[in-house]
Length: 195
Image (tube, rainbow, N blue to C red; front, side, top):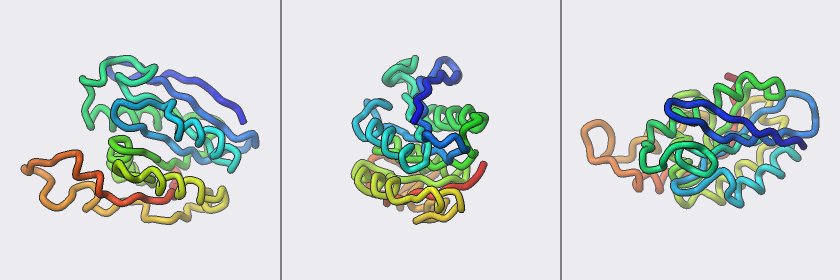
């Protein structure tokens, strides 16, 4: 396994990114890990996945959202929209990486899971773990994906989450949408699509 550190430029700042690559030199699918509010890429679960996923033939990209960990900015200045922009910026940088296949999965916990679902719906990639209680489901989904299934595009859940996960009943345009409502969204296993 090899580990690379990268900086990703975003409007008004720079994100800190760590990429864990499998030892096998062939192109690998990549899981992008999205941490929750007031957390960082260095949480125990993402450090553990940084060792486990490359051993299974998958790359892991863990990064700090703006204002968190080693990234620049102030967390209080971020919004869901800036977090979506951060994930999309990370994926754009990774799409050009020579060791990655162009197939992406998203993994997130708490607010990171909520953001991952939004990005997955826009980018047509899979998301694992939405909401505060999704950690175990997300780990099971990530660990349960074989390299063969990932490369074939097979997965355990639709690549587009149901709209109810993104807009729970009583939310949407013109309503009083609260992020805590996303905590009841289901966890998803991983599947991959090439970009």
